[in-house]
Length: 312
Image 1: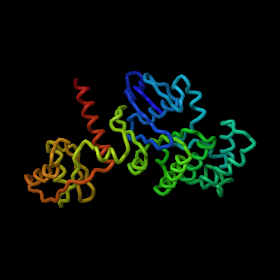
Image 2 (image 1 turned 180 degrees about the vertical axis):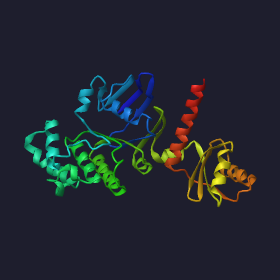
Image 3 (image 1 turned 90 degrees about the vertical axis):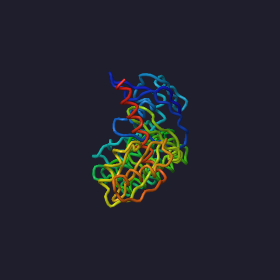
Image 4 (image 1 turned 45 degrees about the vertical axis):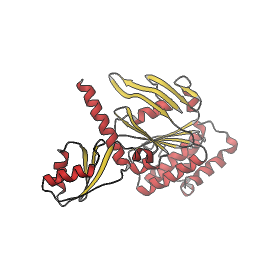
């Protein structure tokens, strides 16, 4: 799957701005970004549900938007909000979707039985969807989205309303689908989910600000990362936020986590000296970045560039 110059405008608002992507098959490709960053808009253009204002997209060998209808035959789409019928049973919902997908009657029972088994819903077969838990509804929605065995599965923030164990179970299913050759596009707000993706795109203000394998993004972060132990976290944070070269400071209990400008040779020494000058006792060390650090560094840099562009 390839996208070049992908752009979407809604009047004077540019929701997606000149995005370029190369998405491998049979892998999980994640989209991470704050609300309004363009994640959902990008995904909807990639699967032909939204017409781009500019740019070229090739999905599963088809051109979008020219061959968008052909693309739709090969994709499964699962939204953030449960969108099946709550007054139908699990089996009735799947039978309804089978009719929508025009699946052959000859293997319908076998296909539904397999879906119920694969998504751990056999015992809920005759249960009304509206009486199910959040995790069960999520699995039913995924069973419905994959009933026609799509080559491409689109998941738009699919785990926002379920507990951590249900999210973990959900991701186990996604990896099984990838093993079977399915390509998965997923947007998420959760850093632990982003770390599970084979590749990741970070979007902010409609722009692609970072892209690659999570471990490569962590290795190549455009910032220094420092942790600070102190008995005066509030005062230390205030001092560091006023220190030139410090981009952000987050408090984690009694610890502080700071990102510094990438040009600084020894970030820990910068932090140590700033706190020493303020008579704040602390223990300071350079640490390895995590994906949240990557996200903060990438989006903050984009905000700074956007502010400069607006000022110009």
